[in-house]
Length: 358
Length: 130
Image 1 (tube, helix red, strand yellow):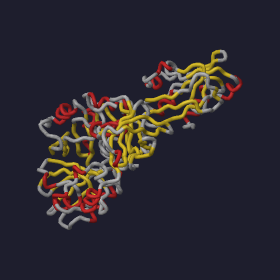
Image 2 (tube, rainbow over the protein chains, first blue to last red):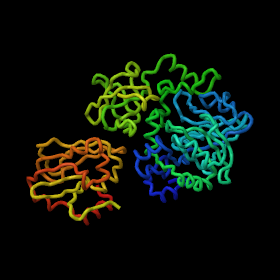
Image 3 (spheres, rainbow over the protein chains, first blue to last red):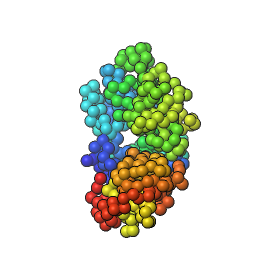
Image 4 (cartoon, each protein chain N blue to C red):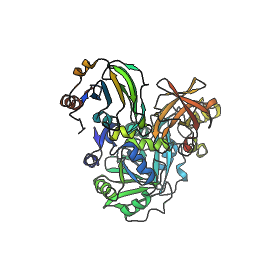
């Protein structure tokens, strides 16, 4: 199994380790709910070094990314990043990614750990001779520091002004003597930064955050936080067969930029309409509405849960589900079949999971 | 390392039993709560229900997974720990004390001899017993 450069730090903190996408990763340290609340109220940090990192550079790099990604790379200024998709020819999603533009023809792309090999194969298949693609996953490490206090704490550890950056802006600088990127992004619904730094410097950075009270958080709380925030996870809400139309990801699909791989297939689904739509839902009570549970409308199966958690913020179950389009309306009363029992629930927009009461 | 008090008896389904006369108090072990992680929901049996040895009597739902509860002894449910309510973290924090789950009136006390003592349960749990 693969180990991140923070592996020993996790063991020293008595983390419980699990296998994730071929990596040995911390699932929790103190407890999933406690870590979730630390991020919502204060600041927490996650080792996300397992995510794939790829440099794309050279004459034609922008045209190449315009062709293989769904969002419009041309709108990015240097030092700006964007969330995007790698669609396949059928209009499904190979991966969801973040594209960092460093210069006119120089990019850094961050991809999902579970898709790294698949993405690299796909990208190389379409790569022009003038563009180079270099995987730097092992050479760099990556952590996310998230929470209302995170920006101030990250700025303190960085020793350089950062809080002027807007969401999705980044700064490339040095940290503990190593090459580093500070990007105002995250996967928790909170403010904060994702930090990419040379692998041999990450332990020192992690310790610096730990010393000022940033809570180490595992994949367990990371999942609760992203579900509460309504963010999709590859393999749950999206995969090679889901359309961005049904996943409500058309905000990162920009047909106006011109043709890209999958653009006509996506346009077809958009004009014909999708048969199902990804929605958020909030349940009554404290049962966890887990992946694969059936969504019922008037006792009839009308959908399926893609991700579900117990929310420590709302003290109830909530999650995301694909629901037949006819019923996929905010406010729709539903129930979730929890091992044979119907638990009352309500559909809500994904982004409103934390704000809407049942 | 999980706490395994010497004065209790244990089942291979990770419940503990404390006997006073013909009444058995039952809960889940420290090892079980550690494995489950944060508990968020409990389903306990109705008072008056008769449980057979190894019969499912409820469910514990943690953030990570659902676990079934099995009665370590045969008897009638005379009390459940309603004080837990929504503060299910009590079961994580104090599994042998305020986190007890139910009391049953034993109908076949001889089953007690089939339960594990602390040393045997410790060994069973360390070997990853299921």
